[in-house]
Image (cartoon, rainbow, N blue to C red; front, side, top):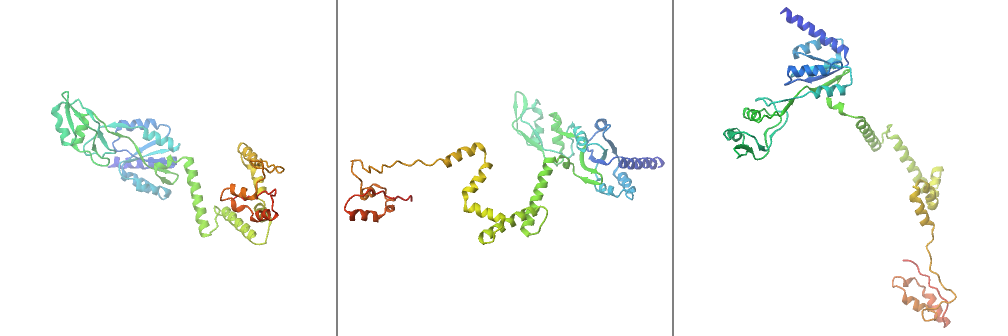
Length: 356
């Protein structure tokens, strides 16, 4: 009894000293971790972390004894359940986490153990004699005899993740020399300077943080604009929208100010706006566009002196109108035709055609 009390006091002091010395601690699960594997993990963490195991009742009592001076440790109490331990460290959490989880050992399936993942038996020749087909028949695995040995016809799942491994499944996996599971320390939670968080937080990189931060700012700005509540995120957008409204009102009314006058000038003279916006375009794209805009469309040459048709005579308004397409004919002034008839002769008449 005296030795037990002395051992507990030593453990309490040890846990208290480690919590005071290290700002961070990993709460780890050590199910199915053997003593040899634990020794390898301790060696890998040497100089980077300290492993401390203990019964859950002792851990809870030790933490409660120091809550008066360190109330932040109360957040660890709900995590003390199951087969857990601590890895105290002051180094980089991600590096230490990788060291903890890197040490894994393949292990055979044991009857009654919970399967951490689905287990499949691959198709192919097993090398087993036909007398052992009863193992496969009991599990409903399709087989055939090929060259005096048992051959599995297709892949077959025999264990589902989260379920217990049955005796028949464990026996068959051992006969096939399949070790489907890997065991090692798994990080349950992380304590860091009074905060407790999931290990997945360590996988969040800088880009993810920036993207989430920008997404939050956009959401706040959108909500603020929708309810007309000014915030730091929405004020720039509110100012821009207000300025646009002022320009719209100024253009509608006769009241002008500097910004509105500039917008009005652009609307009255779009060519000036195009000239001002041209330098912003890429040089390679602007040069051909500017050349195409400035180059006038070639016009057909007209012989005003001759005015002769194909047969050497002057065309009349009637012949010109008849030669034109139907949708263009209404553009020819009928008064010109009447003027030609009144004068009793031909005139050097050029119809004015309007593009429809």
